[in-house]
Image (cartoon, rainbow, N blue to C red):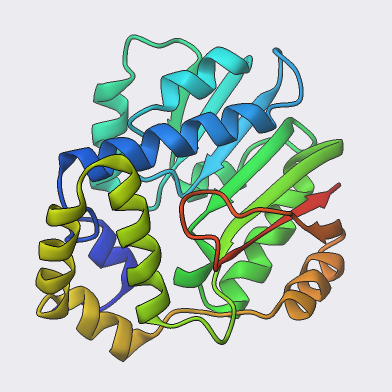
Length: 230
């Protein structure tokens, strides 16, 4: 039995219903992150990057791209995927924590907060604040508000699938998820949720001047994104 979210993400998962779903998710996310890069020489950290299939698009927009994932399996795959791209480096969370201070222009943590405890998130916020240059930005995205449930997530996925041409696969995939350990793990471990005011207060406590962004990253606009300025 999977005992933690970290263990869950360190293997094949049922989150993506097919290859097109995964490709379109990462392509869209890469375009959104690239649009956040402040200048061509920027050093960018994508913390909780996952497979980052389209990270080369982000690398084109910045000077250096650091991909961090807690899963050793994912990191090995990332290193193989981008071994010929000198602008991309793959780091563990421990290696990120050991980076020198004030060296990053942008940190993006998308779809990460929900898998962290409050204490873990607070520790990461302090680390990211220390690593950002004065005026650098943290984008904390895909934060789940308290009222949002699995049905809203399913509806957002189906709308995305309809736009991107994998609706039938999404319907089948949702049915498969109902009997997967993701559903049981979500029920057993839960997902960390936060209201807007609480997240803004947490970011302020870590030293950020923060505000909610007009749109979330990715397809699920029921979730929230925040920007914190160092």
